[in-house]
Length: 291
Image (tube, rainbow, N blue to C red; front, side):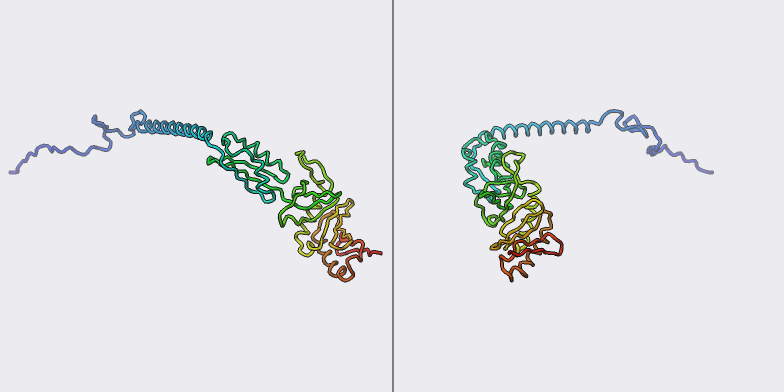
């Protein structure tokens, strides 16, 4: 006879089905948003923290700015420093800064002080900086001399932009500027100083650059005479000859012909053998002898 065995109910509950609904204890049904439709407390806290930091940073910066302004008013100029000058002496420039040392740094008008230095003919540009350690720093950009103008017994200097400057003793190598005559002048737009005629200036600049690049011709050339009608000419040291180069450029090639003619002809026949030597034509040189 078979046995019937009765087992009690298993007290261990079966694992929940993945499709089961959320239990009252706080489970979530599939697809239900965890936030329950409400905003995240953590997100709101982060925004508040960022806002507080921004406000604090603004307050700190404002405080530092106010402190810097108050501190600057209490700073006095203890030194004036000028840099960038090569042609102008320190003593000459420091006269433009008389009375600054001992003044309140805040009271120094940078724009007015820069304009005072820029008014000097040999100064192209001036910048002024007030430093919190009590130093007023003036940075100069000087003009670059190109040639000496010798017209009517008056000597002047022309710079690389065509401005006519009063003559002054200049340090080497700037002191050995080639002399130029026959320069027409116009009033510069600034009204402070004169400027060379634009067309003539192109001839001057091209000729001076060619002479400077030629070691041999640079030793011989003693002057550049500007003339209209494409008849600008050079003169050489110790010779009355006019070496005609014209006004139409190509000066380096013309100087090469000048050097060859000087070495092969002038050196043999003498410095005063020719009245004119025309270098304007390609592959040809026309010379007119003195009577």
